[in-house]
Amino acid sequence: MTGANLIEQPETLLPAEPEVIEALNRTATQEIATVVAAHPKSSLAWAALADYTHSQGRLLEAYAYARVGYHRGLDALRKAGWKGQGPIPWSHEPNRGVLRALFALRRAAAEIGETDEFERLTVFLDGSDPTVITRLRSQHTETQMFPAIQPAVSPDVDPAPPTAAFFIQGEN
Image (tube, rainbow, N blue to C red; front, side, top):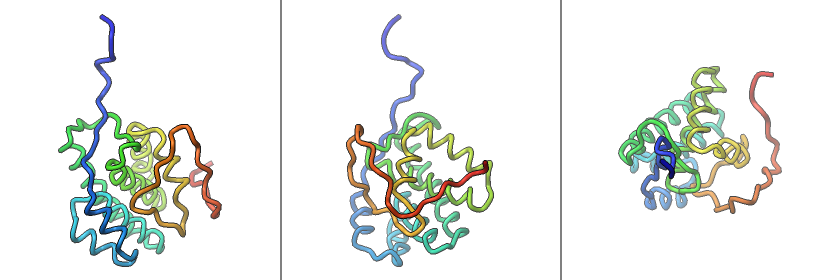
């Protein structure tokens, strides 16, 4: 028998959330909670709130918001046919909210010492899209917020990291 690998999982592609993106783009960062209240099922909104509270140094709140975004993301993925594994590509813009929530939870888990969760989320993100951790790390610093929508980057172009200071977390 020849042909495609029948064991490979299909990509999961979430539906777009234009109303959430529009609301986030017109809302001041300190008012992101109002967007979350209006769109509580949106992992993108929860991820934005986690990023904002993280930038304010409120790590436990950032962890809690990211966890809600993670669970809302799992709900959305399952509704879209995801079976607990398989690609969730960053290249499909509507997937970015879930991936950002996973990244925010991973970051917060590391910062509060939840190493098991950090490792599980690293495996989850790498299995979803092996480029996502590097992409999000290069687009975020302690003082910089993610915009609601990241500009499209050609897949063959490796964008330079931001010029703001950055650090590498881990134990070495």
